Amino acid sequence: MNETIITFNYPHSLIKKYNKWVVLLRPKQVTLGSLILAYIPDVENLSEVSDDGFLEFGSIVKDIEKVLKELFQYDKINYLALMMVDKNVHLHIIPRYAASQTYLYKSYEDKGWPGIPDLSYSTFLNEEEQRLLLEKIKYNFDLLNL
Image (cartoon, rainbow, N blue to C red):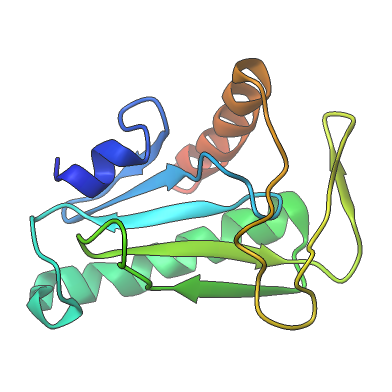
């Protein structure tokens, strides 16, 4: 795995591994269900993603949207390819919500709604809360293959 994937707490944050990509739970939950979609090969430019990688990307986006919509009923979803600090190709997947969400008795606010997501804000999750959220999302990804 490349350096960026490791930075996002791989393998502990792994939701699903595809051939060319991994879906990870974003350690800082900007909004409920925030994920990272990271390209496995060690490249720093979107133009370096292989044709196979782009083909797979389309099906992964469908999986992500299906799972997150079923679990959390987001209002919109944003895909941010920033790659400034963590240089390898990856996207921050930020489900967007018009109203605050509650999961496991914790409130999640979308501080940027309806504008740009506020990446400086996140809901703190302890290890147990992160584990439970990860397991819930991972379980629903696993159901896609049944």
